[in-house]
Amino acid sequence: MRHRDPAWNPATGAAGAGLPRVAWGKGAFVYDSAGRRYLDGSGGPAVFCLGHGHEEVNAAITRQLERIAHGYRYSFTSDPLEELEALITAAAGPAYGAMVMVSGGSEAVESALKIALQYHSARGEPSRRRFIARRRSWHGNTLGALAVSDFLARRAPFEGALVEASFVPSVNAYRPPAGVAPAALAAHAAAELEAEILALGPARVAAFIFEPVVGAAGGAVPAPPGYAAAVRAVCDRHGVLLIADEVMCGSGRCGSWRALAHDGVEPDLFAIAKGLAGGYLPLGAAVYHRRVAEVIDRVHGGPLTGHTFTGHTAACAAGVAVQTIVRRERLVERVAADGPRLLAALAAELGGIEAVGDIRGRGFFAGIEFVADRATRRPFAPELGLAGRVGRAALAAGLICYPLSGNVDGVQGDAVLIAPPFNATAAELEELVALLGGAVRTALAGLAR
Ligand SMILES: Cc1ncc(COP(=O)(O)O)c(C=O)c1O
Image (cartoon, rainbow, N blue to C red; front, side, top):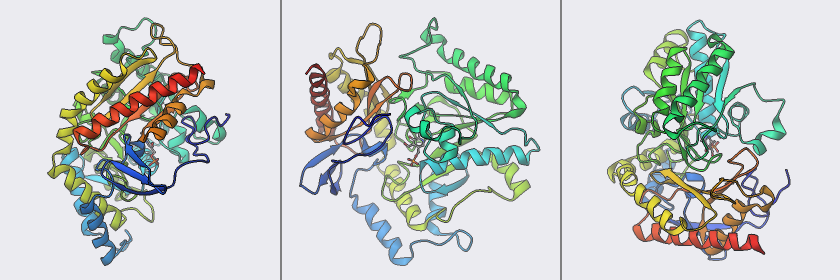
């Protein structure tokens, strides 16, 4: 794939030359070494839930570093590790007391996949090795996580070395399969999953993994109502574990701490990362249900996965500080209340632009999808690089957003993600929406030239 964009390639995720040099950040703003200010409208890739330079978080990390950076997991437990586990269980629900701490989203997904395999082995069903995932989804860059991801440009150079996985179609109310009414979409998609499980043979299937709200590969695409419950039922019927990848959409981003809590569904495992420590230090977790824990604890004594930095003490201290603030300031509730206002403001600013096909999302996780033709929902030609243009125009205007492409079929499609800090002020959200509107108009005007 040709590298179209010198600054940032939304298809491959490759950073190019010409990026500004970051200097410092405060709240919703980032400053570069030339003194330019950027409003962080996407929290980088939906990470910085408390914005930047939060003094309480920095102080907690500093305090921990002054004592000890890390107590290695084979020798020690620690207060920050145990406090963070308790905070996660309190936020996720009492069924989720078991988890493996890791250093990011890919490791969290990788760990969830491995724990699912371990569970089946422990139960005496080692034939259950196959994962089923969805098209137009992104689960990470390690080989296992990449194997269940369907982000064409990021996979292509590694094909042939990826563990074989099965894929069912993406589920997007804006782009339903021909002949499927919106109200029938959830049942249709669940039936597709069941057909795939039956075609493979249930005794071969370990787990189904999906993003409750698709991020980088889709542009904040929420599952339709009833979908999560329907796939939960399908998985239960066939002994298949359900893994929710909440790396981007979880930890409060969508207005409930667990993204799937919105649907009233408990997955067997879920992966979290980005917002867990808000980007202050690298941190993620694979969290699993007590019915999974009971089996692997009994047979193997615990999860057979982990890393040198599992439960890194300073990273856990960052996570404790971030989650304590999120809880104390009721920020998830705030995201739930203000999310619809953000979507409405985006609709007011962008809805009149002919090339804006869909504005969607949940909480502080919004996606704007661009189309060359509103009536047919035809995407722009990929050669035009519209998403990259929007990203560049935004950056030039002082706004960080998250452009993405290939969301329609892996190659075609342009969208942009918005994921502001949970504590952004009303004025900052207003500025975000206005700057994005300007960037979209500039990028579209650039197409005509
Ligand atoms: C849904 C999802 N899962 C997993 C990952 C991988 O996370 P990381 O980049 O921290 O390894 C990402 C990253 O964007 C993601 O959005």
